[in-house]
Image (cartoon, rainbow, N blue to C red; front, side, top):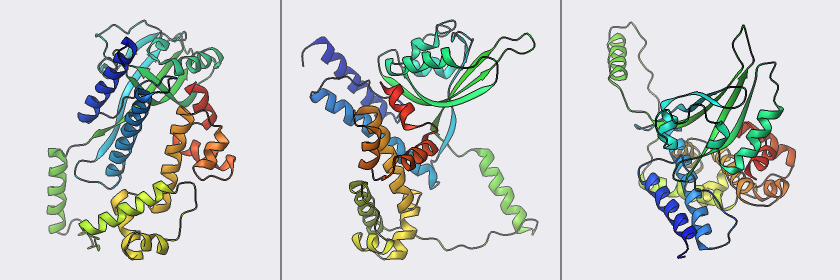
Length: 320
């Protein structure tokens, strides 16, 4: 534990925990090939970060007062050789670089080792005579050594009317969306128009209020799903029985609490677990698919691509 390398690993874990405490769930700690307590702790911290990120995503689904919105996180404009031409200011903030220090540098230098190989291959093999686009996961390295995984949209525009070809690399992130004065005024105006008969009044809808006991029962349902990802989900009636509630409360309450049905939640968690295993284990993709409850590899690949925008094999290749 006293070696310089282990001290650096401990510092990375501490830095990551500080980011989590500040509500920033974007970063990840770079994994090593060691099999020790620090590596186990690193895995747990990274997994916890993803869990928290997913939890806030669910919060946005059910539209709580502080919901979340999608905004551009990183934007790069690159020349045909992959050198940085322009960036948005957030790049320098997130990756901890001085203003102007990244212009002219090879984009590949900002990537972690697991992404550099895939990016070089894309740069060398991609067509330069037509417009194309691709969604892939890239991992950036922040100055202190923390990693910033990002789902990126890469778009290439070829040379046109004397303008040289360019790459655009864009990633998005979840941010908290605060209520604005404009939103308040819009609501006030809408109520006034409704009171004068200029807009139809909203119809009364039945609301389902979740009490503390209901939420505790629903958490049991969630935990049951998490513990049995490799098996088919029981019927709503059986799930309600497991959670000590009735079918109506379970069906309505689960969607209200978690932002999706029990069956949607199971598929969401299956794919999320598969993503982690493909990135951080040596199991075959087919074995991982079966571990998370998919009997057929082609069905798993189709659902995985639909969720993440790229195939399991592409993720495995970029993770090495």
